[in-house]
Amino acid sequence: MTPRHSRPEDAKQELEAAVTAAKQERDDAVTEADRKFWTRIHELKSLYRGAQTDIAELLGVTRDAVLKATKKHAGTADK
Image (cartoon, rainbow, N blue to C red; front, side):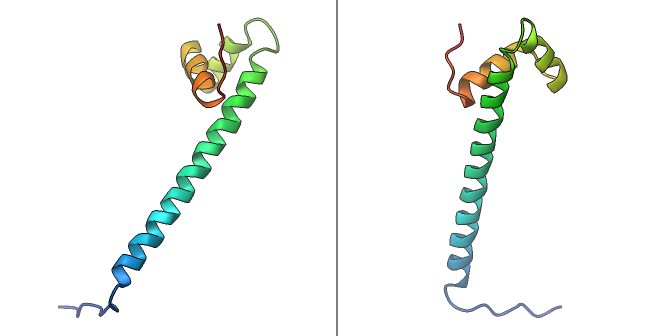
């Protein structure tokens, strides 16, 4: 058998903290990217009548999905 690596004391806890911080940083970046994307989509869907339908088709989702995502991520209050 291959010998097990020896790790310094507390190395696992330090590694766990670093991984947790990196994961949180990634999650924050993804959330910010989603917010920017859906804010821009919200702006684009008002370009002309039917733009939301065209956007949904281009993204491969339903019109309702576009509406819900813009409300969730862009903080809009569409009627």
